Amino acid sequence: MSDKTILLVDDAAFMRMMLKDILTKNGYDIIGEAENGVKAIEKYNELKPKLVILDITMPEMNGIQAAKGIRQMDPNALIIMCSAMGQQAMVIESIQAGARDFIVKPFQPDRVLEAVQKVIG
View 1 (cartoon, rainbow, N blue to C red):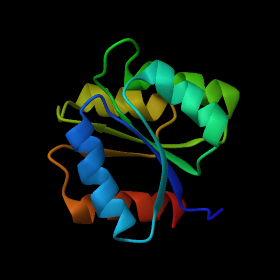
View 2: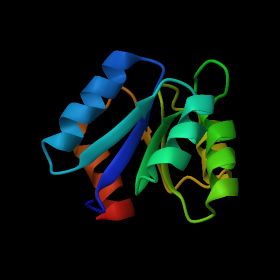
View 3: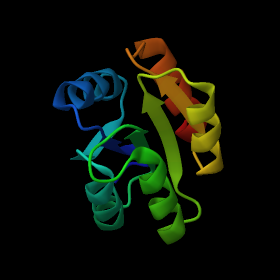
View 4: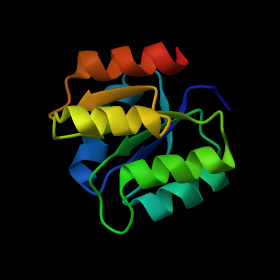
């Protein structure tokens, strides 16, 4: 398995599809998808991806809680958060929860790739 494996977590299927499209075209391997934080933690445990791209605003469990949950299981987990809200507080909270970077929706392919390359190469 490559070390370019990614788990995509967003409650909007079309957002996951957009990210998947950007990333697979650039040699990344999307090994799983989840639509909320609870599933994200389950999938992380099961799939052990190199990177998780986590949406912040989701039903059941938000991305910040999911990031904390994933990092409790794996302190070295690599996480990039994304959100439609460009709120400074969210970015700070994400970084405190262990995120390595933050991307804002609507996704700009170049920015997504820059963030992913910075975190996992």
